[in-house]
Image (cartoon, rainbow, N blue to C red; front, side, top):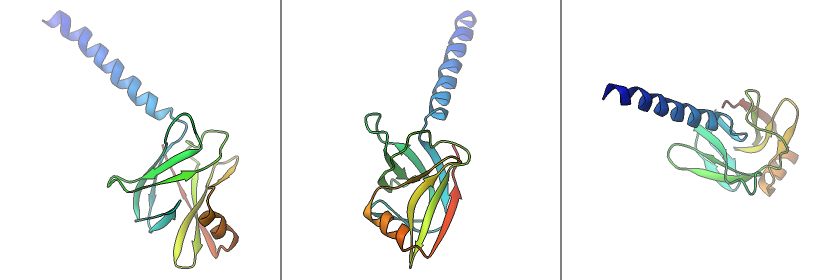
Length: 135
């Protein structure tokens, strides 16, 4: 029994480690804690912890922002490089009485969300707030 247990535990450990590495290498996986209610895409989302993930491989620009309660919004961000860096910032525009997620900013580039609400908020912005994401 002992002779089979050791190899089995080794294989289980390798599988678990590779699954963790696969998630860590996802080029579009970020976490952010947003301290205020905000608009993303066409949805109003409450303050809280959110994850940003790619919806599918066919359209890497389509991303989902979601929280643990299942509240989510689809956003479209035309990007050419990985968003998953320790320095990626979620940029919100203070648009009167609401905050609108308008772009994701990496050290190299500013990726603007592609929707009319974000476009309007960017052009009529009162002030801008950025929150660092992590992966």
